Length: 119
Length: 223
Image (cartoon, rainbow over the protein chains, first blue to last red):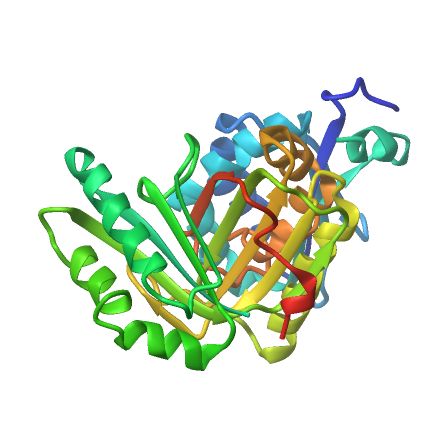
């Protein structure tokens, strides 16, 4: 859905491949150690997706955790606060033993590309 | 072109003396082909209150200037005087890859000094440099731009790179550059401690100032 210029929805995607059998533990740690701090920075937790949709014991689950903020100014505000917060940064070190591979991506709706680039 | 830039924290009561002394140190040498000495503008970070940017035809001319008692040595003595100056960040470098959309006679000159201290390998650094250069191609407000590796650094960090841009006005920096998705949604990942690509120390110098008298960044001068 297209957003108003300056208030486009910006999405954060944490795509995390868990170590075999660690998908649920990883999600639990994320929810308890990362989510409260991120919410306090203005980020809104939109989705928590997992594939396959069961907790595997001997293989890896993949998590797709999606956050949103409204507008690039809000993205910068959250980013500046994130970078000053050692708890958010240290979470990734704490979670490292549970993670096989991960990626943090920033995304928008394709319909918002034109207005986002018109600056 | 070989460049020397200093971000100077002049003691507030001594700014006039520092400016006069540095201008004289630039004027007194035929080696200096361009000197910009300008107050940092509000919003600059870790950049003191003065930007001093000098250009030389090559490194040999820079070395000659450094050793000249009336110019480089005079500037060094002035900047080492703690009664006048509390902190100096300094970089010397051969100008790197540069681009130009339009010539500016005046505008806003902005630099970002960074310390790439967590790079996985040289390929990551090269990719970062290439993407940084491409910001100038994607972001309309950037009129001229250059990404360079630093040869000599002193100050708070061992600065490894300087990313220079020229804008027609502050909107170019604050709106076009800061709000463009090529910046926050792409190149930013090298700076973001939450991204796996993160490799740049979060302590940076973000300095910008007014300039007049023609462009500071000239693509024809790149190495």
